[in-house]
Every structure is written in C-alpha cells, then in structure tokens.
Length: 578
Image (tube, rainbow, N blue to C red; front, side, top):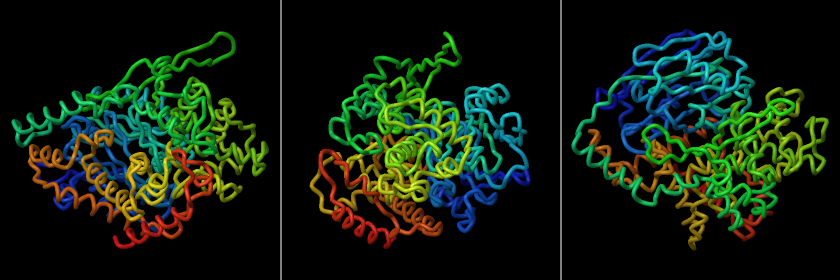
C-alpha cells in the first residue's frame, strides 16, 4: 500500500480475462484519489476513440487517508464520458473506499470488454471473472440482493452494479454503490454496460499499518471532535442537504419547472423539514464517517390492483428533490419518492433524468414535440407521466427516446428548445440558480459540476467582487477541491480538512507534505485535467449559456448576459494559460 514501495495498482483486462498488479512509485507524488486517477486515465485513455470502445479505461482510486480518518469516505471514478464526450469524473461513498483499502488496492484500472455479461469479484488474493447472464436485465436492487448472497466478505464488502439504463447505454446511466450511494454523474453506468460489466464486488480483510500510531491517535481525536462537537457538520446530520430547499426557495435560488421560476409556494411541501417530519425513518453513514448524512425515507406504494401495498426505503437529498421534484413542479414529497425509486431501480442519474424530463415538458408545451414522440402527456406537477417517460427511456421505443437517452443537449439540438435546455457543457445542471459564479463554475469546471468549485456558494456569499476576482475565486476553489479529492474526502467535510489539518494527518501516516505542496498539487491536477479535456475535444470558445439562465431571476436579481460574456472571456484567458 502507500507505505510499502509505492501505490498498488490492479489492472483488469476483461477481453483477455487477465490481471496485473504493479507497485507504482511514480504515482506517489500525485498523493492518491483524483490525482492518481488523472494520471492513470492519461496513461490508458484513447482520446480519439468512442467512449464505448473496449480500449477505453475505467479508473477507480482512493487516497492515503481513505477510511483512516473521519469522513474520508469516497472513491473516485474517471473515464471518458458518453454524455459530454470528454472528461468523466464521479465520486461515491458507503463502503467502496473501505473495501478497496482492505483489499490492498490504491487504484483499479478496467479495460476491454467481456464476451458476455460478467461481474468481477476482487479480493486481496485474486480476481474472479463471473458469469452475469442471469443478472442482465435485472434492476440494481435485485442485482445487489443476489450478489450479497453469492459473494463472501460481509461487513468488508462493497457491491457496484448497473441497472437496465447502463445495459441500454443511456448516456447518463450511473453505477449504484451499496444501495444508497452512486457514481452518478456523466455516464459511468453506460461505460460499464458497453463492457458487458454488470457489477463489481470488492472485499478485503487486510490491515492498514499506521506509521506513527501515537501521533495518529492525537490527530484522529482532534478531527473527530471537530466533526462531532462543532456545528460544521450538523446540517448534514440534521435535515441533510434537503435543508437547502426552503432557504433557496426563500432567496429565489431554487430551479422550478425547468427554471421558468426560481421559487414557488409549494416548495414547503418538498422541504427537508417536511421529509423529516412525515416520512424519515433512519439515517446511515458511509464507512469511516460518524456524521450519518444519508437520509432514508419510507415510500408506500401500490404494486397491484386492490389493497396491495408495500413500503420501501428510499434515500433522498437536495439534488434528487430538486431534479425530480421542484424542476418538475411537484407539490407532494411522497410523489418525489416514486420518481427517485424508479431512477434507482433503472440506474439512471437522477439530476440528468429530471432535467431531461423538465426540458421535454416545456418542449411539449411549446409544440416542439408531441404525444407522437412522448407517447404520453407530460405536465408539470403530475408524477405519473414522468414515471411512464422513465420507462420509455429504458425501452427506447422510438427515435425521440433514443435521442433523449443521449442527453438533454443532444435532444434540444435535434428537436429545438436549446434556449431553455438547462445544460452547461452538455451536463444537466444541479439544483441552484444563484448567479454568475454558479453558471460560470458549471460551464467551465473540469467536469461541469457544481461540486468542482462551489460557484453556488460563492454567489451566496454576496461579496462585492470585481469580475477578475470572481473568476479567480472559482479557479482557486477548484484547485483546493482537487487537493481534497486526492485524499478522497467527502466534500461535506471541506471546512474540517483545511490544508494544515491535511498535512498533519498525512504526517501521522508517514507522508511529508507541506501546505504549499498540497496547494501546488491541486493546481497541477487542475492543469492536467484541462489538458486532458482539450485532448478529448473540449474547446473553451464553444461553451454557451442557454437564454433561460438570463430570463429567470437568480437570488432576486436579473442576470446580465453582457456581464456573463465579460466573465467568460476572463475565464477563457485564465484557462488558456494553463
């Protein structure tokens, strides 16, 4: 592992059913996580080939502090995105980081394509190539249940699997991780499907040696107290991220009905308070986290005619409630559960699915598409037609749904309505309409995600910044987050893990890093990502912002496209220097 002669990288060739394990000293300077994953992606990527070509790699990586310190719980996946055609980067928690840690692998590279549906079992001792033909076509829930029965390692095991969305190569299909977490964004599930890879089970029973146990105990206790005895993490345990719904609605920063509005009275019915008071049943945590931010609600559904009902547990958070709730104009939080569960079972990314259906609803209202294409009548506030449309995304009965399965931007270009397609950099936007930094950050971020640089949070600071200062704030935050993502911490804990704390924590594990070296690492990773994006065809000058972002007020103010153009040019100038 990290202290024993370099990073341990497992490479799996699905086509040849071969594996290789290497100790990589050359990767140590990239720390772990996204730093190492970026280097491995550079090494194995074929920029000129389609995202679904068998030679394209999937990279999974953890960091030197993964599950060793509180809230350092994530693993990163990197790949060529079938949704954007460029950099794919996604994060997941629960047990995947722990399973990789105790299986003894710092990174996993998967290439090739299985002859027929397969799943992998990865242990410290071997990799098994298993027949998954009986699992193909099953939901993520059924697949997970069967794999838990078939696979050893209970308690130290993580199960990654796709649903029918990944099998059908929906460009925004995700990978379900241990039921309640996901590699959700940018289409990793479709890349799995293109490789005939239904699932991966990782488990291990190795130990992880601590270089300086007494110092580690001191640093661990200091971080643990910061996490549980201060209010830094309280909001995540309390209401969870759905606590954002009502404040954003009050501020006028909540996307509603395909961003035709930024607030509506019924948002109270979808607030974190409503979920908690009426249907919350428990909270769970990722392995190695004392917070418990994963909120599980009870969804009571009718599964047959007559009095045939059952109750199922469904995880909810702000982004899901936004994309499958406010963006679709729903007014009852119980209806949101139904849509979340459907995306979960199919293995669809909830944000992209909700934004795609919101665009389709408005396109139908404006007469750009009709029931001939949709095979139903979509209407804001009506959940049942959206459930039907999700089914059609999987069945793909006509050209319209085959197109919509490739993303909102492609569908809007083909059928019209690009001016109200809520997409930046071909990636469907997250649940904030707060201002210039949010738009600029998602448009120009390395993976076009709100979590790249937290532009939505920069807007809410309401500081009086010059255009140059605003652009620099976005870039500096993205650099810092690259450092943190090399660990790979949960970004909810970014205020716990300042660079001084990170350096202290690494030292106890035998890694000498200064604050300045960590800061420089983030800059280098950012630069490397942007180089990769350009190799994949990304052109700064081609980024556009749909008109809808100017039409709907953000935090109570109308945004000026001329100011945005000024910011865009400054950003292009900064990034062209990398």
